[in-house]
Length: 559
Image (tube, rainbow, N blue to C red; front, side, top):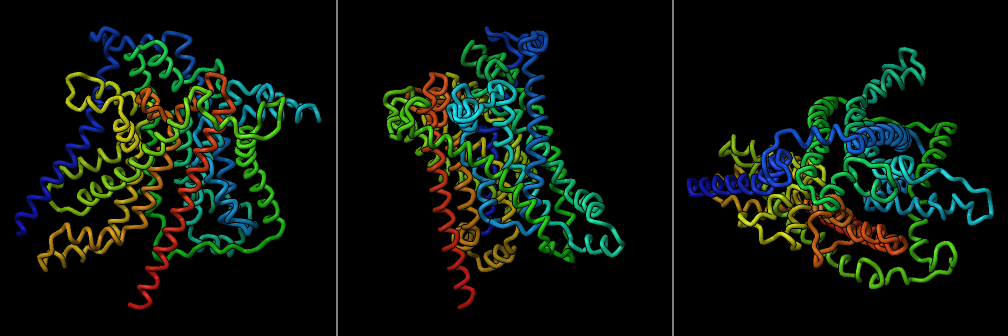
């Protein structure tokens, strides 16, 4: 029986790695090879790259993208650090409220930030017109770098905030006690203890923020105007000019900072984990009125910067004719009159997000289990681990483009899924696969190895141990991964914009179409539906987790 199980495990491990090669490695190789071909499919070496860098209009996009990413990273990183510092190191009031508000942009499509800013700072925006003539207006020249930067700051803020919050929470309080006993003042302790203790988090946040803004498509599409960036260049090359080879070349350029960020993050993550020892003590927050008031004010301002665009957009989606008839109604939620063509895209998004969450969660956890918990075929499992963390370094547009080249090929036996909802679900799973995989792997590492050893000694089949022990103990992580897949599948634009067909249009992509067609209010309405859906699903998840925890605690009490 033991030999039979070992063979079953080996077959499953080989199958897992082969599947990962088919859905991750092969499409990437196809994309890479396409970049060295001309429009006719003939090898042309580096001509596509040379053409890109020697064409001023195209190469300027690279400079623009770097500029946007650097400025957005500096602003968002600074705001996120002090916001996280206020929540973790001070006694600000309303911490729970500020924590939830900081995460709201995660539930929103990135193009939504641009649409919301249009209603605030556009030609007919609230701020631009001075609340429709009641006060002096302010024109910030939204369309161009200013609008993109503001949108990107909102988009990348929660990611930087979570990194800094984690880094600040693992600092050893004994360092502060030692510094204080040596007579170091508050400012000196900040520069000699606080900043060095979060240096790895700072590095990680910089690369994550830079990469996210570097590869984003939604914000530049909504408020970029004539200010081109790499992501919009890919869209124009593929959709506008049908120049697939040039699109592939630009896609490779888009991947470079993501790969660098991936490598740096891996190094930083290992070093950060080694900073916390068993003897470390958590930071103890002392109440200090002046400091607490200042950080409460700062946190309130940042929170308003996140809430005001969202509330304005929701309000605008209910206004009949902005800014001429501000009476409320729901006519913009009738999508039959606009490019969306009804509620079909929203329903498609719900289906895609549901199947992405269910299939993605199951596949990810099973793959993580066999890669992490098995003893057989070590080299093949290591290859599987590498392929599992590789997607985190791939921008969504690169995944979508690679899938076009790989699956839209008559010689590919899997080509039948092209143009269906299945390829969208698969692209979503691959695009967001790495984070749930790493989360599942970390959870499985925490489980006692005795479970498997006892099962083997008692001749219990591994699949029974997996279903009756491993899955129940890992249920909170499994649910968290499901929510992660669902929310991201609802808001993503870049990964699926090349893959949707007339029958599989999605809500997030229809927002782009409606915005392009001038149906901005309808785009705001569709954005509102996505945000509300994600908030409701997240709330249901929180309730489910609380119930599971209560049952677990009750079981431990009566054990």
